[in-house]
Length: 153
Image (cartoon, rainbow, N blue to C red; front, top):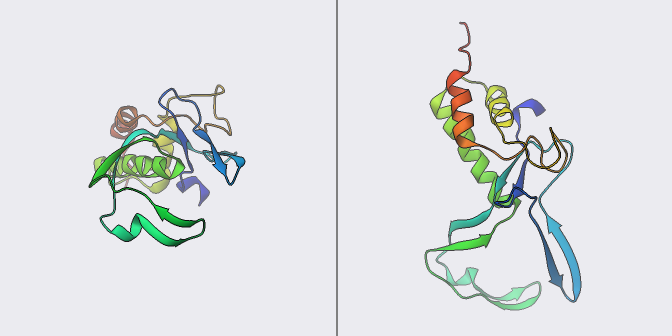
């Protein structure tokens, strides 16, 4: 059910919502982190170390929608100054995996509850549509998971 799903947003290191403005063919287009009443938590997306594909085809394309595209290959990994919502999601997935590795007896619903309840409130006070429950806190989530009551069998 919905209570066993995490909807993840992206924040900056100062806990503000990630947003950028791109120039698309002379038109300014604002993009940003997902938001809304179902948003669960945020994860920071600055200074991320990411792996890069090693295939030349990923960097040089003659058939891209905007024409010829050549992006220099910078090595096996790079540090991105900024990510996006798609960069925040694996951070929260890693936290869910850590909680489950610590407490494999927990249900998906319990894991979601632990992650949302241990988040650091950012943005408007309380749960809000722009930041959800707040920024994930790995140490606090693991502390809450450790103390979570065992299910009676």
